[in-house]
Length: 262
Image (tube, rainbow, N blue to C red):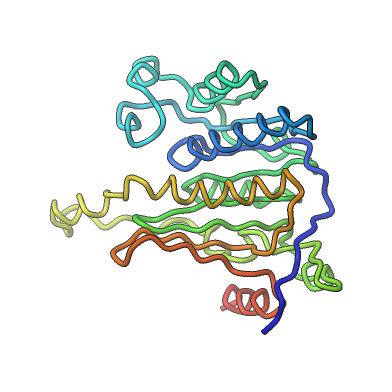
């Protein structure tokens, strides 16, 4: 059995940009701010933080996401609510943008970008980032977290030596279908009310599970701890709670890249 390698990206992390502050993003925002607060407390290097999300809080977000009725009544920007919350509560200096993410405007080569988005257009913009990209995605009761920093096969193939990997495939290279348009929903006339209701349902805590998995990658990256996995699957379905992380090995990378090409 191949011994897992270690991911050592050629990048200094000067800022963390969280894109999407809804279901998963809200939980990850809390984890990120706690990590940065802890770094500051221990007098370690702490990156700056940006929250980016064009959406405002709606009544349907209260309870399912980390917002209050007052946030919904004010129709506040999600990014603003979280930035103010953690700036006041933890003495941080989180900046926020109530607009769509644009890589040239909101990120730099020194950014670690965390994607918590739910549409292909946002992921296409995230894919333009030439650096660390931690991507989160979920379905009804499952999801995945992907850590990568390149969409170049050439760079990926030549970036490993003596068990140390400088480059890992990002979400766009690993799962290109994430950048494709979502399938059109079935006409309501063809689906029963019960089926429509079922399709709209989502496990209340799946966002928390995915965000917690992503937070562990964040913690290791920002504390310069060894990272030996690049992909984590989360499942809260009928067979219980399951997390499966894929080790960084040549065999695993080859296998997943073959799947991506099919």
